[in-house]
Image (spheres, rainbow, N blue to C red):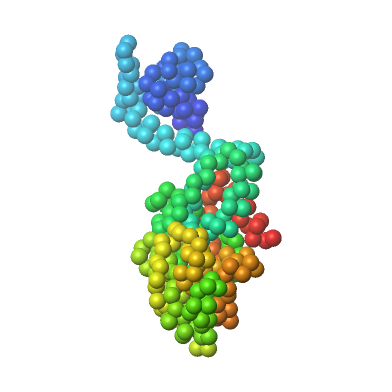
Length: 301
């Protein structure tokens, strides 16, 4: 520094303030208390003004010392954080990764990615918050979120996570179709019983169906409405013959193969953009940056 006060000396001063004394600061820094005292005296000599008031029983910052520590403390903390980030680049990633995600990715997209992440970075604690509505991930204390592309905030950086395109499908149990008949057109769905999902904010997930006129929204008879958090549960009610379900096609392939559910109007199934991981800054913390790398690698394979 131009005034001759080194960052190392300022670190000692901040430690004295944080620990409440020379001896405690010395233990924290691995220095003799006499050396801590000498360092503080050197700072005062170089600045030409006292920064601490010392008595036999206590010490307090002078007004000048308080100004100095208030300005220096966050700068030193930032230096520590930067050094830790750089160390993480060449060693073990540590810390926490907190994601805010919709239930739709919890079944078959996120588990494989998190499993690989845990293998590569076992020192990171992962927390997943499941919400369907778009939230302010910064205000919620999350590192990143996952949502479908049409609702992402414009000021966020985003990358694909999982399939680039997904297809929605309609299905019902053989017993239901035997009793009610197979719909022939998208318009026939309004006469059928539906298993629907409601978002956290109160809105029902729409049934968007492809017809000769293009994409249309169908409003069937809602016999069962479930929270969107119960996506897997909805399939159980479909198996029991409660009604027709509208969900991701890849979730239904095993049921179609086994015959426990039957495709309904497959020519009308629409496609949609797959989910995206979004986050607020290109200078992502190390745990998030490591997760982004895994997602990018998976999307290329």
